Image 1 (cartoon, helix red, strand yellow):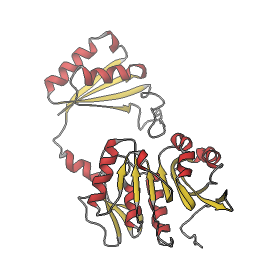
Image 2 (tube, rainbow, N blue to C red):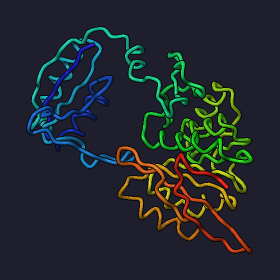
Image 3 (cartoon, rainbow, N blue to C red):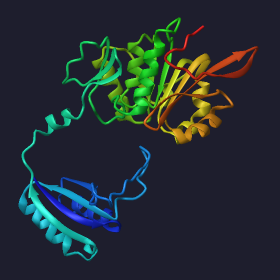
Length: 319
């Protein structure tokens, strides 16, 4: 495997990257800050699931992989001969050492502790001896491996509150289930019936396979399969879709049921509160690395829907 390295001006990054993949047979392309580790380093921030604020840095290092030296040399020669190559400088071509890519990928995913007794463990690891609850989950196409703060907060909430539910959660809805990790967790902690829905067919298949691997029963399907009311509604998505889904998610929440929302940045908490206020008053229940978990409980008395703030924590006692 050979790596072609190019110094590329910001306004040429997309053109160069597309050409390397689509026309010059590169097997992969990555873009890095050419000034990383120096005083000129420039951090770029964007929300997950959304396009980055710009395609790269003013001075970007574009790396492309090729199967052999001839292919890499040909790609560099043809690319630099084009008029669009203005602002592109060849940094070099280097042979990469042979790697066990499967082992390298696996090494990046270690067991994740949700609580001291609750762990997410890839299939190639043995569970820690202290683990009493374990979800076996490998990285895949669908979001949710337990490494992201939003997922960890949801899992932590489930683990802390499941034992206090009397009776057990009769019905649980995981809306936007991804890998199915939240639905699987609810089933693992005693939920009687769990629906996991997503608009992505790949996520549905992933959730089904992961549930089977963990010997728990969930129903994974498209969102239309979610019907009626649920004792617990979970949604770990992003702020924008969560606002749009407010009427739907609250309609699925039974009186006295818990609503748990994640995928929300700290600065977005107030707008999420406002979006849900007609149906359910929310409060921040947890925070992790700039993200927050928001929870609420629907209350209904004398036929009138009312709300009560439910800022749940691990020490909450249910009455």
